[in-house]
Length: 230
Image 1 (spheres, rainbow, N blue to C red):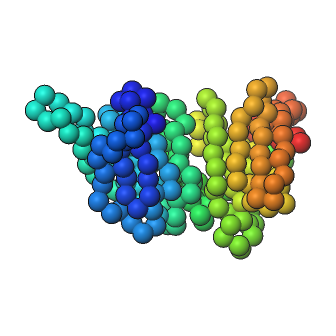
Image 2 (image 1 turned 60 degrees about the horizontal axis):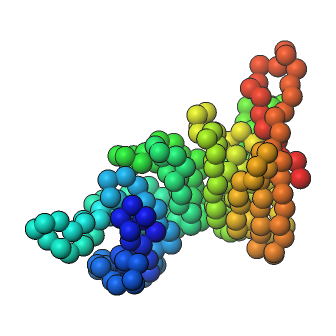
Image 3 (image 1 turned 45 degrees about the vertical axis):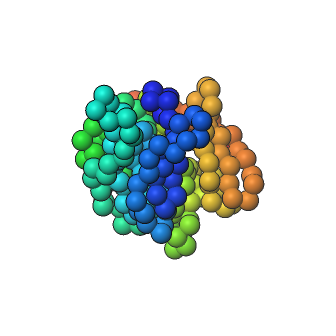
């Protein structure tokens, strides 16, 4: 729903623009048999559509004195993902984030659509280690799929396979994780008040987590981290 323009959009094999009376204002040509998996609004009357491995930027052309017709124009295709994009959200006024079937997360500039940061391997941010250790992920594709995101002013929270991960936007790295938050794939997460997070999984289980700062000795040079408590 684009409240500012008083219209809403729907996606399948094409992208359609509707008014509140359910009149079809305009539509694109056939985009893909894969279909549109997610849509978000970005500035300058544009929207981003996730279509398979691609992100497609469209611009909405509103009626003017010369033309009373609506139109939707394809502006650009972004081909940085290696597999199908499952999740797409705005995180603030400057960025949006995408996640794919094979665990790729990309942070994008919302104005010029360039890549700001990329996380293709999720890491163990344990403060006891001098260097980060790569998590050995299960070989099943759905065990590394990024199904959902939520966010706050500082972090993006990602549901990756059966786990939960906290990605800090300023540091551009994972600062905390719960590798096996559920017994099956985490499908949805949401922020709650008081630094809490709720998650639900494929098997129907729902869990509430609390995010707490890890207390460290003054002699430790490692930055303070964040931990999950169930």
